[in-house]
Length: 204
Image (tube, rainbow, N blue to C red; front, side, top):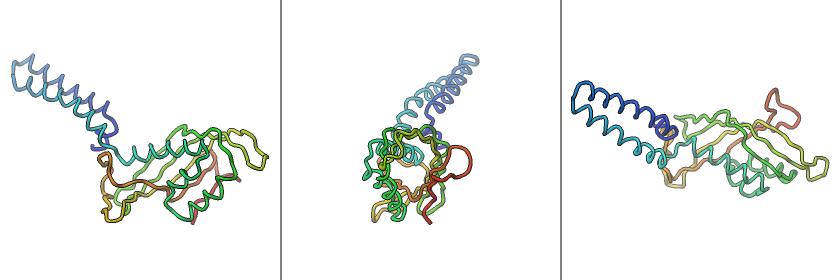
C-alpha cells in the first residue's frame, strides 16, 4: 500500500474520488448528513495524497533516478561519475578498464524491464533489468558511431553512512533519507537471445 501511495498518486486519487462520489451520492439518496461530511473529507484527502507522493520517495524511484543520471554520465563520457555509483571494488575496476575503450555520443534508457527490491535482505539489495541504446565509437578507430541496443542487468545495494542503522525492511523512505544505492555488479547482453561475444560477465 505504501508503494501505491508513493508511486501511483493518480490511481490513489482516482480511488479516493470514486469513494467520495459514492458517499455524496448516498447522501443525496438518503439525506444522511454524515455521508456528505465523510465524502467531503475523502475529497480533501486527494491533494494530500499528491503531497505525500511528492515527498515520499521509494527505493524503486531512487534506483530509477540513479539509472537515468548514470546514463547521462555515460553519454557525456563522465567516467568518474559512472565509477562513483559503483560500490564494489572488483566491479569498479572492471568498469574502469572498459569505459576508456569507448567514446559515447548517445546513452539512453529505452525501457525498464524490472526493478525488484529484495526486502528482508541485510543490507537491502535490488535486481535491475533495463534496455538501453548507445551510439559508440571505439577509441582504436575500428568502430565509428555504431548504434547498439543492449540489455543491462544490475545488482545493487543500499548503503548508509557510518553509524546509521540499515533500515532494510522498508521499501519506501521519506525523501532525503540517509541511504543511497550503489551498483555491486553488472552485465550487458543482447536485447534478445543468449550472451554474445561482447557480453560482460558479472565479476565473481
